[in-house]
Length: 229
Image 1: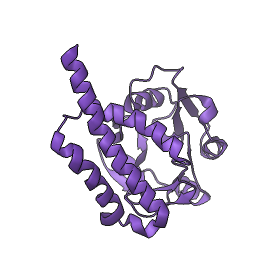
Image 2: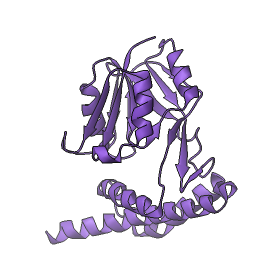
Image 3: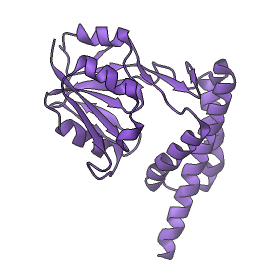
């Protein structure tokens, strides 16, 4: 089995769930944790790139502080031949205490590269960051577990952070101010069948519409502040 490191970023160590560290210790002897006090936070890609730069091995598994690996995924990774340059895996999101299988939050819709050779890969993107791969990508079957948004308060807190990053790179458009939030709800609830997740799917789709509205309202305020400066 190829040796690999585990890289974890977190605002501070208190938010790292015990199951995140427990599963990391089962598969690696090199676990790197980077908090906002260890390295000044610029954006998520920069923070994750710094974390992987501190790892001992070339191969890195990226975990967030609220993620963990189920036994099936640990077994799959343990039997991996590492013949590709990176591997994507699905992610099962628990939102408001329930696993979500639709609303654009299904495990396959949330499939991304999280296991990779750092000599051929790097993180990019200020928000909704992703791994850019130079080479081939394999696909793992089993999902990692993400204890995402366990309360509306947590959703709003992260919404405020993410929309600020996104709005700074978004051109204000008064037409989209009305259309975009409506489309966000339709996209998550109808197109991606959020209704099949019941009330969880409805409220999640509604909150996504609020997310879309917040992006354009913040974009408008940033534009006005720039004019008055």
